[in-house]
Amino acid sequence: MNSFRVTLDKNLSFSYDIYIGYQILDRMPPILSKNGWARRYFLFLDDRVDALHGDRALAILKERGLAAEKIVFPAGEDFKNIHTCTELAERLLERGADRTSALIALGGGVVGDLTAFVASIYMRGIPHVQVPTTLLAQVDSSIGGKTGVDLPSAKNLLGTFAQPKAVFIDLAFLETLPEREFTNGLAEIVKYGIIEDPGLLGDLKKAIEAFRSKDPGPLERIIAQCCRIKKGIVESDETDRGLRRILNFGHTIGHAIEAESGFSVSHGEAVAMGMCGAVLLSERLKYLSSLDREKIIAAIGLAGLPVCIPASLDTEGILRGLRRDKKKEGDTIHFVLLKKPGMPFLNGGVSPSLVREAIEALKE
Ligand SMILES: NC(=O)c1ccc[n+]([C@@H]2O[C@H](COP(=O)([O-])OP(=O)(O)OC[C@H]3O[C@@H](n4cnc5c(N)ncnc54)[C@H](O)[C@@H]3O)[C@@H](O)[C@H]2O)c1
Image (cartoon, rainbow, N blue to C red):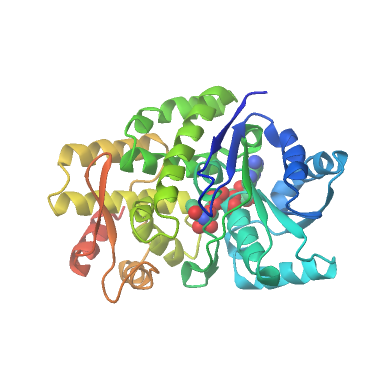
């Protein structure tokens, strides 16, 4: 077994350990028992993850004497909404979950966001633990305590901040991940490469080869580097008021594309398109050189992600989505733009006509 720990600052409210390694799920029960976060654990997972990993995960918890049971719900972004939350809360209540209970999110970003949201509001808040099973969730969504669900017209519009008690990143889960989902996760790795560590852009090919040959070694190093970057940013701005907003690179246009497509464009694909939009805006506003824009777009393409916006998506619909962005202030939409790889900044002054032009220019 190959694992290590990243420990966050114990003085801060979001302090928790992130365990990264191959087959580290086995290490979770003793850690849960030792910390005594709950008397009963409810394993929240979607039906696809349940079919692949649910019984084994439950058995691991029970074999070590923990009181645990599964609560399974349908997979997919379509179910990341308030109705699912109400239903999950009812099921918790039926099974007698109380303030001495905790939730374990076993799944991708949808399961993680939904579980954490329910945990943060059920009986005014119970603890939760994250066990991310997609690449996207392992490098991004399981860390940082953003919880939430979608409204039909806007992503993540209902949500809270609720930090997990611990995050267990087990690379063994990636062995069953479809390649399309892996590619989605690469979008967030590209994002870290663009905003913080351009070296990660050079690691993309290695990551794809490691995934295809089921070699956890190189992936563990890349995932750990992404977690370190996210941890550093979250530590300095837990509630997204300043620096943390740079993590939104590509997400402003991306979220609007996702919603406009009725969520048929996946999160990772939409973020890739949004990153192309952000670098194009950066170039047009003369912050970024054309050469750097080309290099970044090439890296996005190399990851197998789209570099164009589908022509079928309505530009005005995407612009309407941008106006609903929860990070806008008054009429100002904040875009994270780029001076060069590793040098992002928050810009509030992009005119709607320039955004319209950039979206049109990216249409296939
Ligand atoms: N909270 C945050 O900070 C944050 C950050 C980024 C993204 N997100 C959210 O994350 C969500 C996207 O997450 P996602 O891409 O992980 O999607 P997802 O959770 O829908 O998972 C994608 C698919 O993969 C399946 N799956 C999961 N693990 C698997 C495995 N090991 N093997 C086989 N199949 C598996 C799932 O059942 C699902 O069908 C979006 O809702 C987005 O808003 C949140």
